Amino acid sequence: MEGFQVVAFRLGEEEYAVDINFIKEIIRPTKMTRVPKTEDYIKGVINLRGVVVPIISDMIN
Image 1 (tube, rainbow, N blue to C red):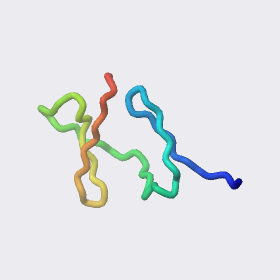
Image 2 (cartoon, helix red, strand yellow; image 1 turned 90 degrees about the horizontal axis):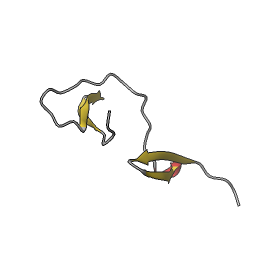
Image 3 (cartoon, rainbow, N blue to C red; image 1 turned 90 degrees about the vertical axis):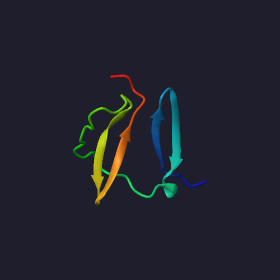
Image 4 (cartoon, one colour; image 1 turned 45 degrees about the horizontal axis):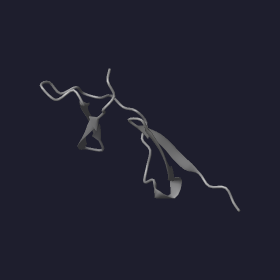
């Protein structure tokens, strides 16, 4: 049996691993802009190739 690669991550208390063949891309962290008057779980937004992408987290800071 040949080895395979996975991307592992945690969501809340759960841990997951996804076969790398199902991953489209992994981006490096970039400057995030905080958005005033939003819920605490919305950490901010980033500009990903001209598209505004919200950054959401359930982690308590």
